[in-house]
Image 1: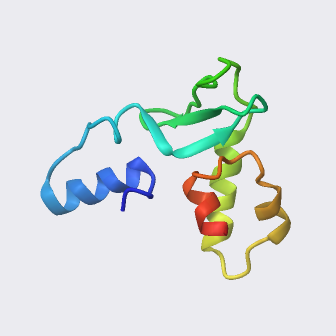
Image 2 (image 1 turned 90 degrees about the horizontal axis):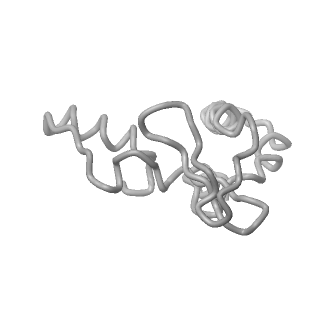
Length: 104
């Protein structure tokens, strides 16, 4: 599904088709992992390394620990009893972030 993070889509394609996708959607920046910026713009997570882009609108730096917080939320969503405070507190995700769609 195109709503899944790029690394999951790429893994499925590699397993099923022995194909490593590097299209614009699977390339350097993952548009399913967006983080909101106070200016109203957004940051994107890298598909190649543990990094977050500068804001695509204002050029500002992303808040620290965004990727670590996203990993914690993903872990909570897989658990039997997710921590509701953690899920609600994950407010820096963009409405189109794949985790935001799972929480909603």
